[in-house]
Amino acid sequence: MKRIVHKHPLAIRWFHWINFPVLFVMIWSGLLIYWAYDPYKITIGSYTLVSFFPDGFYKFLKVPRRLAEGMAWHWVFMWLFMLNGLAYVIYTFASGEWRHLVPNRNSFREAIQVTLYDLGLRKTQPSFVKYNGAQKIAYFSIMLMGVGSILTGFAIYKPTQFSWLTSLLGGYKAARLEHFVLTVGYVLFFFVHIGQVIRAGWNNFQSMITGFEVIKRNDPKQPSVTPDPISEPIEPTPTPTPLVA
Image (cartoon, rainbow, N blue to C red; front, top):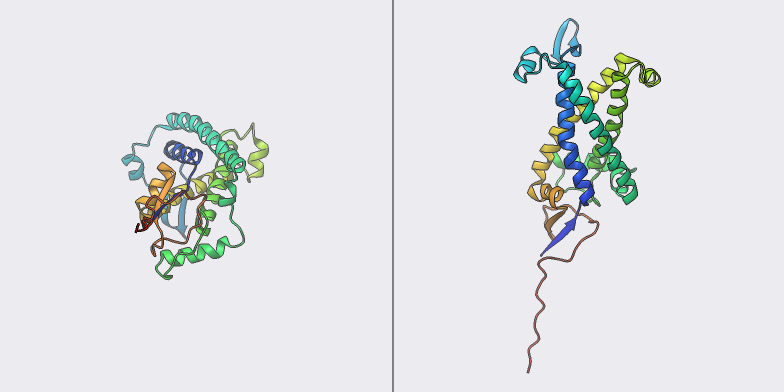
């Protein structure tokens, strides 16, 4: 027998799918800006282990000599990113969805259990209400990273007008490095997120489109989930018709 689990409200789905292309444009336009001065690298002594980024990378993406274009796109989409994020936070608190996102004292223990399960070192996936501990930590961290990106963005774009903010973040160079590290964090999260979506399967992906997920009762492959809320079973067991003498 199957049941429908309602997972994501319409507003959450809209915020999610709006944020995806907006963040993509932000990262792309940020790369056009970063090309003009790209000092960051990981070195061991005098040897450069990783350079962000080699010339071939820029040429492949046709990034060079597009600084003004990058700044224009970045500034416009920054407002969309900020407004969408603000609307998401307001809705999350107004609707009570924040209870599913904010990590609690058990989240880190659950995150370790989920990681062991993903690595094949644990046989069963730990139970959860809507998001497991690892998801709570990841999604809440992304919200904080969004705030950090906006603050560091203003600090490096208007360092004179927001001199107090730039100073609070450690100065212009520190704020620019922090902004860059946050961007790298988004990219890493994106790849992990896509990998987890593929691993979870189509049912999980469709829930972010339709808002619900169809699961089988007593399916050993499904984790123990307490949905919020659950509709009636879509394939009820037929009730036997009594025989008439």
